[in-house]
Length: 293
Length: 272
Picture 1 (cartoon, each protein chain N blue to C red):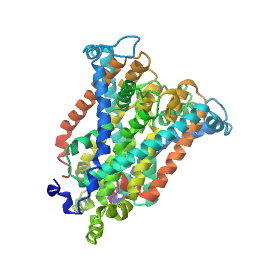
Picture 2 (tube, helix red, strand yellow):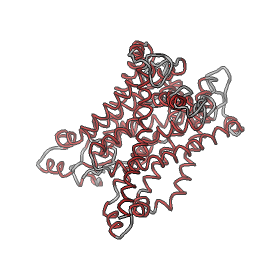
Picture 3 (cartoon, helix red, strand yellow):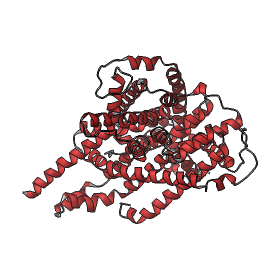
Picture 4 (cartoon, rainbow over the protein chains, first blue to last red):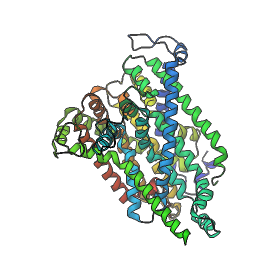
């Protein structure tokens, strides 16, 4: 076995490497078991008043077809789509600035500002947005005092309010992925385009934008998946008026203890994410070819 | 001539757009700070009188104190375990061929895409089945799985950037593998290991959705305690604790940036 080891060619075979796989394999196993538990529960009957599930059934999945639940699924996908699109539009200029700004202080300042929300956690971010968007929150107070509006503008409990807060959540990861792609574009291409007479807008549209396509795809895909995972934001800003799958799962689990149905929602949600993400991949494949290989 | 003035306009416009976006990102932090120092319980902008009473109240609130303590326990265990698992696996990924390599890597990276409420529900069901409902174990295991992708990436990137010739030199001078590891590889990897641990710790301390599922009353972490508080009360102690959170996180990240080069770890800058 050691004789066939290609890695040993560079440094003397490191004998500890094989044992290095074990902890990771155990973690992977634990995660697989947890996911298998969800799958297993999704196929079991719900016994009202009991935490233990009943026999095997497909009833949970047929119940998902009810208009009430189908509506939540559609709503979730639509919110994810809106969030990913807005994040891309707002995140691109920032990623561009992060890569191209020369001043080191400005670069660090942009980086810290962009990255901090990523590490703040959903509750702090959501609470902060409630204070910004609420009926006697920051924006409404300012607009009322300036006399621009006479009644508070309703952001809370609307899809728009939820999407604004979610764009803030997914911005860091979008900017990081775009900036990674932008920073790996060879500047010589841009200089070549400009020396051949292309203006900056034209150079951007014909060189930078196509070459950053892999970053755009990675960023949109990740924001989509993260938005799908959001819970506190739709729960607190949506306040029951804007429901996503996560909110339904929580309600079913902790208000009615219907874990089998909650599990089937998770399974269907996961299938839906994977389906949408692979569609997105498929649809953007021609675009991806424009990027570097 | 018209061209250069057009370019200047483009520059100014671009700068304004970037400043506006940075403003959007900073707005919640600024507003929550104003609210935290406001003397009144009701929100009012701009604040009429300043006070520190909400900070005092937040620090004295039992659920926040316990949540902070529980959060520290969970964070230290899970980020340390994740560092060991992630670093060893990054090594194996970089330098060793084994069966199921791609499969294990795929499974360990998948929590980036699997919604946290699904991960949380999975571990909750698992805990109920094996009778671990009330302890820290299930919370720690769940957090390890969730932060592992970030540690793995951080260590893997530094391994890739490491100059293998240094190891070769030590090895050809007769150093046995474990000595090469201890005296050459690990010291060179230190920034990657520290930033990986730091990311894991910050993410674990802030993790909310999955924690809501897997924590019990006795093990609830700070974000869960804060969520419960927001649902019940509307006074600015929540703003005060948010400000402490934001300041601590920004300080840690500034530190990480200054000493470890955040740009390189996040792969948004060239290593050259």
